[in-house]
Every structure is written in structure tokens, then in C-alpha cells.
Amino acid sequence: MNTFGRSFRVTTFGESHGPAIGAVVDGCPPGVEILESDIQQFLDRRKPGTSDLVTPRRESDLVEILSGVFEDRTLGTPIGLLIRNESAKSSDYNHLRDVFRPGHADRTFIEKYGIRDHRGGGRSSGRETAGRVAAGAIAAICLKKRGISIAGKILEIHGESDPALFEKEIREAREKGDSVGGIVSITISGCPSGLGDPVFRKLDALLAGALMGIGGVKGIEIGSGFSAPKMFGSEHNDPMSPEGYLSNNAGGILGGISNGQEIIIRLAIKPTPSISIPQNTIDISGNPRSITIGGRHDPCIALRIVPVAEAMAALVILDTLLEQEKFTAWREPGSV
Ligand SMILES: Cc1cc2nc3c(=O)[nH]c(=O)nc-3n(C[C@H](O)[C@H](O)[C@H](O)COP(=O)(O)O)c2cc1C
Image (cartoon, rainbow, N blue to C red; front, top):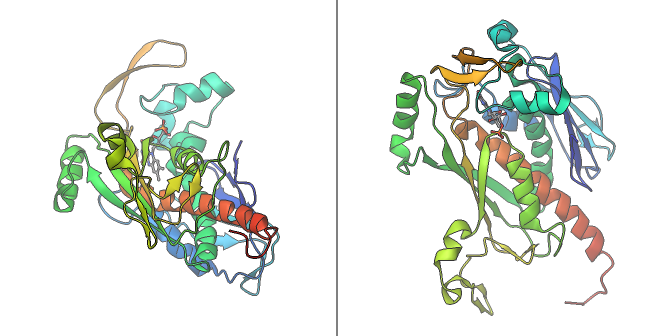
């Protein structure tokens, strides 16, 4: 399925080298001021070709609002968002038509569908995420009206946590025709308590699902995450005082429900699969092959995943906020 969310529902469409990609947003509250230029600001942070450390594919990634907005205000009807593909050099991929690239979805696509658009990774290309960022921009604008903000940043590149050395790690890998991964953090501030459900739609599960739904994300931690097993319960529990929680090992979520603290998430991003070092693989008939991947690629996709992860987090938080607002509307006045 290509649809995400319940109350704020997003469907993305498009392939890397087709005519266009985009999203349809259903369930956006009416009357919210949205300008194309607001959405564009978010897309500009994701778009390729912005520095020599990311893919040189040039795309202006200009968004067109096709529906659902009238005189700069949302109508409450479906919002159509279109981004045309301009720089699709499909000939770069001709030699990969019948070969499976290691680290990519080529083989699993054939095993699932029996057919695939091999150009630029088709539907599993990072390009698909432009539609999510455009939809996430709308969610972020709505959340801002409720005082909720989402900020992502790079914590590590290839095991290096000193930001002064990030560029060096990426350049060294690229010079060898190789690639590196990294760790990205997402912090959600101003989130009220009460978002998420205790069992099947736990907020941590929804965030993990949304963020693992980004290509290249291999791991996720909420709060203390993988350090929790090294701690005692007495260290890990977050004590409470009348002023609030005294620590945040929970990462802002308890029992699947936001607790009003900052929500803190870390994502492990794998090294970019396309590398120009020869690799062993097989072709569609099962014959052994060696391939060297040309085309235009990011030596470290972690840099470009930051705005995508912010967008996915915004979609989850707005979706659960809208659900919770319906819920609280029925609570008796004065109930705790
Ligand atoms: C924004 C973004 C850009 C990406 N750019 C590239 C790229 O230039 N080259 C590449 O090999 N993979 C790129 N990827 C990663 C692949 O899409 C992804 O690793 C692949 O589809 C396999 O999926 P998986 O890693 O989730 O298993 C990108 C992913 C994202 C989210």
C-alpha cells in the first residue's frame, strides 16, 4: 500500500524516472494558511544537487498545489501535490536493466512483482520521498499552530561524532568510490501528553514504522534505546516531581502514549548502496555477474534523510494529534 495515516492520510505516487512524483493529502483541517512557497522551503532542504557532498542529480523540485487550497487556505478537501521530474538520465541505467544491484531492492521487486522500472531504482528510489516531504511540510505547518516543532540533525557519520570531521569521512569514502552511513536524531518538542494508543497503535510503534519506512534506515532507538539493557531499573525509570519528570530515558513515550516530554529518536542509516567499486551479483536469469554502478549517487544518504525523517515524524504526530482531539472532545469537562 502507498497510503499512510488515518485522520491525516497521505498517498504518495511516482517513480524516479517517470514524468512526476507527488502526494495526495486527505484529512487536512480546513482554514490553515498554506502557500506553495512554504512547502517549497521544506523541499529545498531535501532536494539533490545542493552541495558537492550529495548526488549531483539536479532537480528544482518545484511543488505545484493542484487542489484542496483556495486563496492560500486549506479547504478540508484532498490536497494534490505535484513535483515534476526534470533530470532523469535513464540511459545511465540501461546496463542495469537485467542485473540486481547489491544493497538495492532490485531482486526483491522482481521476486514480489515479476516486473520493475529499473531506472534510478523506480519506486524504491529516494526520489519518492519528495512527495512525503511535501505532505510532511503541510503537517509541520499545522503542528506549528499547536506549538509543536520537529528538528533533525546528524549525530554521527561512519562512527565519527565530531561534526568537523563529517565532511572528511564522506570525501574519503567518495574518493575510493565507496559510501558511508550515519546516525540521525529527531527531537519533537512541544508535544502534548496523550498521543498514541496503548496497544496496536503505540506512538513509539507508529514512529518506528514511519521512520523505518524511509529507504536506508536500518535501526531506530527511542529515548535510551539500546543502552537501556545496560542500566538498572533504578537508573532507567524517570522519577517524577510536582514540576514534572526528572529525566527522560523514556524518550517522551510511556505505554505507547506521549508523556509531554521531548520525544527523542535516533535512526541508524546504512551506507549508500550504489558504489562505483566492482561488486559480485547475479542477473535476472541467475548467472554470476560483476557490476560497477555509474550514475549520480549520494556518497552518504544520511544527510538527505534528515528532512525526510522530520516529515515522517510530522505526519505521525499530526495524525495522532487529530485522533486525540476527537477523543478529548468527548471527555467530561474537568475530568483528569
Ligand atoms: C532521500 C534518499 C536518497 C537516497 N539516495 C540514494 C542514492 O543516491 N543512491 C543509492 O544507492 N541509494 C539511495 N537511497 C537509498 C535507497 O533508496 C535504499 O537503500 C534502497 O532502496 C534499499 O532499501 P533499504 O535500504 O531500505 O533496504 C536514498 C534514500 C533516501 C531516503
